[in-house]
Image 1 (cartoon, one colour):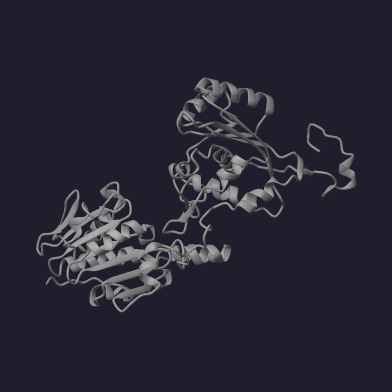
Image 2 (cartoon, one colour):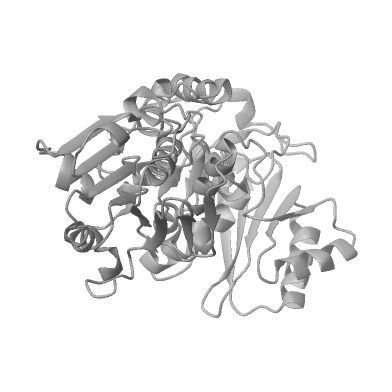
Length: 438
């Protein structure tokens, strides 16, 4: 047995010191689960000969696994008895081996390589489907074998949670661990957690304390908020015009222009099969006729070409290219620009001042289709557009054009005039529209 000098947080000591068939650790972000599991398995691999499997629901490549984390931790402690291959990790002194697998595409036949496993680490246990669990669980059958699970709960009916935690027996260890249990949690992470607590207690309980979301609560935008925005309440706005342009990526996708003046989103235009030049010409016409303050243009697909043409035509101060995957302006709250735009659009829809969006059933469906989650820093992230398209049967082009209008802040000193006499004083009823506004 090799001696080690690694300090494992107290709550994680049972990983190495106690015998259970299942060891399930759950909680919110920054609880240290991944680091503690990695450290514990590295120690175990140096104590004897073990076959250790690291599995997750989807693993398209070794980069999707905890391979890098294990390597980083071994390097951190200066353990030079590990050898790192492209698809596995081995300890040259004890003969221990780490293997890595995705479960989604496995079946009872090709998963047989796991039958001799001593420890199986199931990472992101909340993502494991019932089908995958039903195949994996009886496959780990070696005498004394253990299944370690780390998870941040998403829903009440997470399959592994239902299978193990709801009616835990004497062979199942269930431990809750959060950021305040982690002695190595940084002051920055604690600041983000407490900031979230002050801003939104419900989000704090889910992100940082591990509380599951209720059915449907994983949707970013609520149907009721969009329906409320559909109610007619504004007829005119003097706010600067901002246009979001989502450009078609594939044959059946549409290019969409969304027009918004402050609290009033009043127009959506769709186009099919426009060439790069045709689209640039149409936007040139819009610029000349509607005088927008900003046009936020999706740079994906042919967007970069359209942007270059418009910039060459002298519209560089008006047109802004937007990369959905780029860094957010407020990157302590959002994983990327796409999450930031959707998050700001969601806040806009919830505005107490009252907003209005042109009624459009397809836009409603698009906006309410996106599921949210959070990264280890508690930042908002969204599911992939491919998943949304798979569920909707089309790309959410109208919603993307709408959220593009929130790509950057635009100075706004405009006012709205409400429909009828609601919120309008006597003087404004007789005010004449001028070039300076109302």
